[in-house]
Image (tube, rainbow, N blue to C red; front, side, top):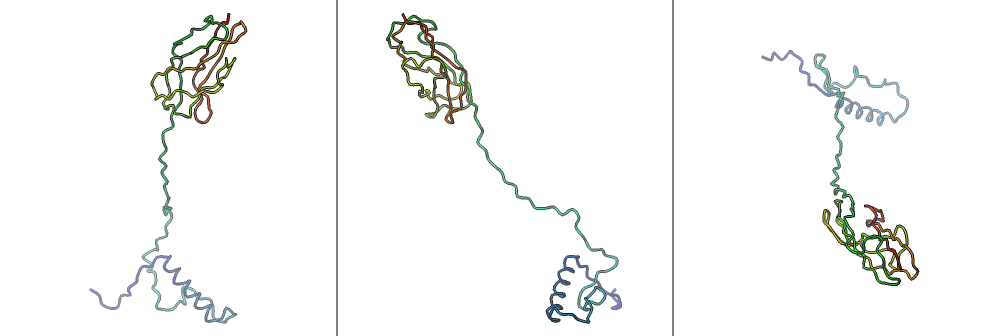
Length: 190
């Protein structure tokens, strides 16, 4: 039962109190012209009576561990594939085959795309050692899907001078990075 004699207090957060106090200080400075005044700066004891008071039994809530909002940016990265090439077998012209000088040599190697990347039109074969034997030092790599086997083919021309010749090749991805083992042709010209 309310007898009318009890003093009602409204709890106010420290932030609301600070906001009201800031407005009052601004108005006070505006009215005094920012000059020296004999009126003392308002303190909590001489604030106007229309401001709510904080009850001594209720303490203001001052956040100590306020969570800071964070912005989570999720990237959906495309899985990075891994290039791989494994030599399986010589399909034509076994190593140290004797060939006629100036003859055309259709060399084929059976390889496996042992990586997880599919070989596309940007993939290349490049000469990495020995003699080009009349072939362009860069060739298109046969397009192939990951895990599949392919026949790689380069047409060479046997030199006119007798001797032993060697031509070593390697696969390169679209960024020019070599991968997989090397494979070669090794012939004896007579």
